[in-house]
Image (cartoon, rainbow, N blue to C red; front, side):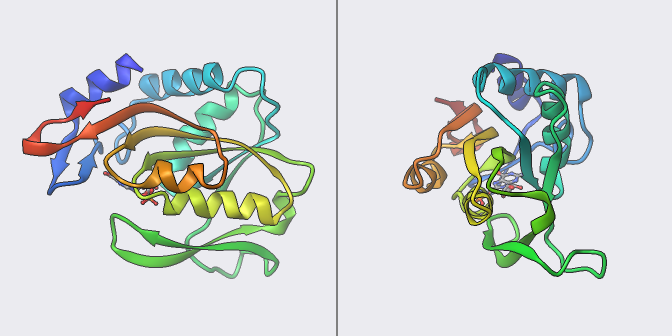
Length: 190
Ligand code: 5GP
């Protein structure tokens, strides 16, 4: 998706060797117009697929997922929660994830009320790095007996292992910008 790639080149900041900061348009301040084009592109990629729910993970995935849902007949968006809370149901689907950016493990949870074996679920996330977050979401859909339509990723870092990990699960992956390398402060796309 050229619009997205151009924006990454213009405003993305490389942190260390393998983190891309896109907080001026995706992760902190959100460019809604760009987000709208991202949603439209996910619809184009998954055209013809039956989607009953969109599943993402808090917090950065929520905006992308909600805008994308509008292109899929306003299907409900579910976001996996990262923290236990009084107002979260006791009956939950869970997955353990290793956070790439925080370098620590955590557990995500989705209430059993919101996913079932009737669901065809499109998983959406902002980044694909080593695949832990997406894999956890795939596990949750499968634990619910649902069907994973595919995983839609805004930015994939192809020099990390995420795609390999997800392909083992036979999951279709659609990434809108695929970064081949980020060496010497320069983003190179596939
Ligand atoms: P994974 O689980 O695939 O290793 O990492 C994906 C998750 O980590 C995403 O949900 C995203 O929030 C975060 N993440 C991974 N790499 C980056 C990155 O380069 N930049 C930002 N902003 N977030 C990242």
